[in-house]
Length: 246
Ligand SMILES: [Fe+2]
Image (cartoon, rainbow, N blue to C red):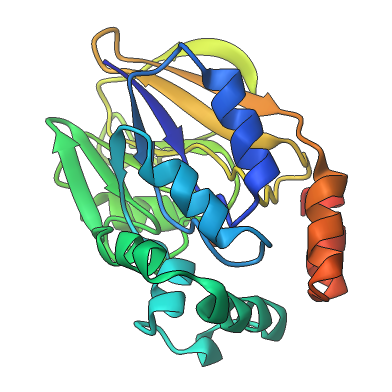
């Protein structure tokens, strides 16, 4: 089976469409790692697209905030502004979709899906090797896909006691990597709001028979998303950052 692994769509419809088009014919199911809403102008449209596709997903902190499971005080003012707006425009059907998302899923042997980390699935960031070392102890499968940081990366557990784990940055070069015997924390990056300096949408394809992983970056019409945000009077920093990938 081949899985399209994607995270942090953040209501960016044009980015999601570009990814689905780019990945067409190369996957059987979707594994979604949370934050379909927040920051972006098209929450209903993005949920509708995702809900129609085969696969499963987990909830992110922005999804929980829209559902009222997290206080908006936990978010910075620009994020909170759009979450408030999102609460007002989401249809009841789409709210039910968000409610159906789990916190942590083990969809098949060896793989865990979370938004943040295996220790705190909704909120915890795994930003570096030190974070990775701490949360690897909470992993009950060999591999874990996670999102939340909007940065594509693989953290590989130490192969021997006393050694540190490895951080393997990813650049969307489409090269095929084979999964190692060591535990891995794998972040496919963000579809709708990349923060690694590359504004293109980011995603992965996992082949769980070959145990291979491919990472891709895809151009999308950023200015169309920005125009929709401008029309809704969204905060300017959110609009600018899409061009920068920061
Ligand atoms: Fe996010």
